[in-house]
View 1 (cartoon, rainbow, N blue to C red):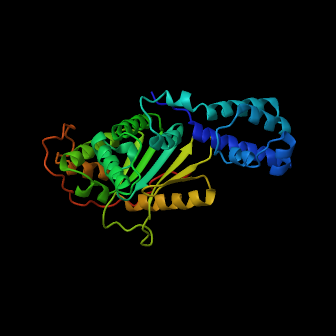
View 2 (cartoon, helix red, strand yellow):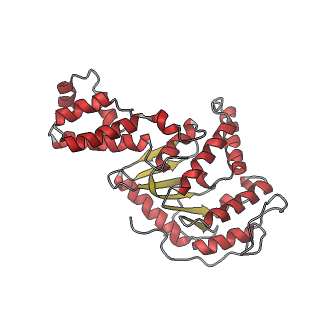
View 3 (spheres, rainbow, N blue to C red):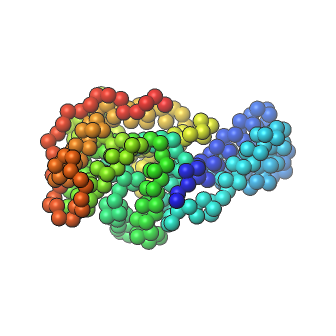
Length: 323
């Protein structure tokens, strides 16, 4: 079963923030620390403080000694250092995992709240195997045509994405704003889209999952158009930094910079105000599968092409609670 505790990526970020705080509290510059410990590389401290390298517990111990850290905090940070470096142990919780999916799995593990928006696709945590397979194979074809073929087996990627999805059971609150365009015929064959719609109906019934649909003619803010997909991650421990992940097609960017995070929070709130309510979204999805509202979810293989139902009134309420 996937872990409910934070992954190594988040542990590295948390450790780095604490090490920088302790260095500044001790009144030391980076050069003074490098000289005091006797490290040969000036970039070593920078990589540790920015969470870009797997920490060596001995290096962390040397820093804590230099900073004069008390026993209680020292034990806590030493434990975080071990968790940050134990990637192999953490990955044993997953039946299958790939490099591409791992970064997102590390962020999703241990989250108290995930908020996602994608203008053209169903977010990865909500995708059926069929929908995911079409996304992965089509992207692999682009890479192949560009002379840079993907190294991962497509079926392994599908399996890894499915492994990530079991994390939804551990997240206290998951909210996604889905664009109507992500559910139209360009995204895949009719049977694949039908299965995806039914799956979304099932997910929308989970008590910790809230899905909101943004219709094609919805106005967001003062005619604002979000330029890219993004996800916001908030963690149970307030000392773990909130994180933003921006998906831009072939490159993903992650940030904990507060001002940038706050802008995306505003955008997500605007999206929620313009989207259908959760109940209207479920009705829309149910009608789009071709089933009457309130009927049991069945296999979708026999249904014909999905058609969008009559558009419903939007809910102007807030999407998320104050963070």
